[in-house]
Image (cartoon, rainbow, N blue to C red; front, side):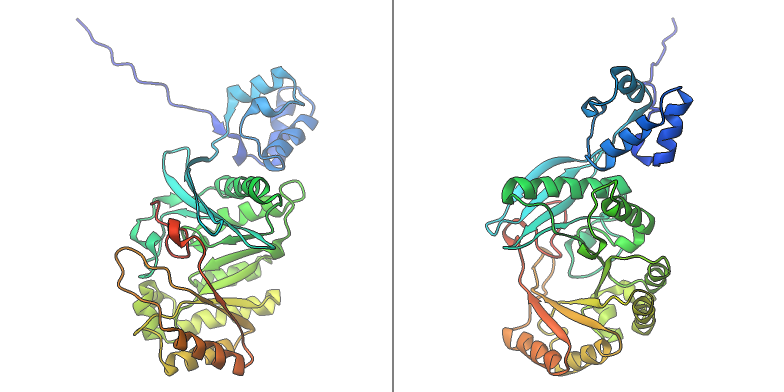
Length: 353
């Protein structure tokens, strides 16, 4: 007697959102359908953000069935939504391959900011960040990043009756390690045929990869840049962010000067002050010296504890010393208090918990 093992057929459908508008038009022309239908589908996908073909109601049923038989839409789904006492919303998002990332809606009186992820896990090893405890599973696709923005915009409309005002790439992952997909997502977000947001409202935050910062500048990007600095002393920065051994501060500074020369956009330095780590006068003076070499401002960030770290935020008088010295040197500085700490949604706490 013979036994046959039947294996399920592999899904051969292509995610439709990898196609360009021209490729969508060519698909319809190939099937003797007006090229205008390709433009309509593109609008449904990127301007209206639909996740199923039946929602494309201005297409004939036969055209929708044709799309279903050839394509799929691998969109993100909310697995868990948590709300903080301060109004911050944290989303645990399930991807089509059963992996998870997190994203945030951060509301203030006048703004609604989307904090989006660019990787599942992270490529780097910052000692103060919970995401670094996860190994990098994969990069997010451009449409998965775009989906986060669409979702958070819907939440802002529901909870605050206003659309998103800002987007920050400060969630899970190092955006510059997923360069092509991050830029492709921003293209869709800013495209008038997409979400039509101004690139001035978008900030990409990086731990500082000089070669890619130069590339961004040469590529003529129009969004804003933030650098996670935390120390302007090379040996100390390597302790806090071990990958910094490969990216020395002098090389980072050269790349930032190139960025400003090409874009004329001021850089934001993100900086946490820890007790016994970077809380001395020497640290403050090093930061001042670094900032004065390129048009920049400093965003001092409240430290958010994570489970396995013994790091503690420096006392308030040290923060005050930083602020006074920076201001005395005519360097713009703000102190950013954390949002969403009660649901592990604050800066450095995202780890799919």
